[in-house]
Image 1: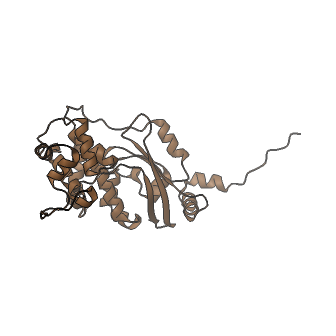
Image 2: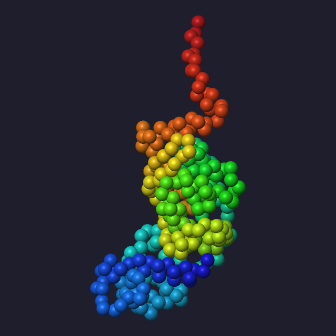
Image 3: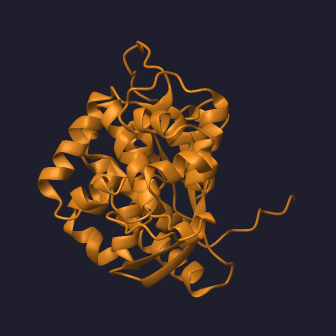
Length: 294
């Protein structure tokens, strides 16, 4: 990834979305040839010279101070994810060790098994699905049955035809996932697998390029998701995304449901229908009371 170009495009798209009124500036009499703020207005709001901001947007200003970064965050009204992305793009490039494969520790695998009443899975860099429980594989798709290089949430949402039928509000969810990829690209500009994924999505997804060029970034937090399952119908979840201690590049995603809700009942049906044969047999066997001692 060309960090200078990425920084230029990110700053340009962020200032283009803010009107003078939103920034607290007078409209002025000069006609505007571009949407949003002009460079000199961003510079004034950030407390830097127009020349310096222009060099920043052109990728020619090295190692800006924390005060400059904070000024840009304030002027462009960046959220936490955008602040993180800007910091990544402004950081001085360093030689990084090769990115090693990610592994899920045994305790997190055990946690996924414990959360057997709701879908839960663990995402890694570039939205790779590192592990998932049975209900997650039933509600989304069976990632473990896919080739290792295809176990990826963005790839599923944008390239699997079934996802468009199964994921409620598909366009919003898919666009948000592209924004998550953008955040990863800023942190790991030399990730070859991420570059390969972006190339594949560019070629095969009609919507991807538009969303990618928006330079929107998003950090996983919490929210609502809706799926339509062919066996049990509509499922509504309130999801939480948590970073397990010890690995900031992994995210535990849990799809919670209200106890006793239609979704909770549907998930129970789905769990029963898809349980392994020996598990269904064990559930159906009557419990025998222990024999009395003579």
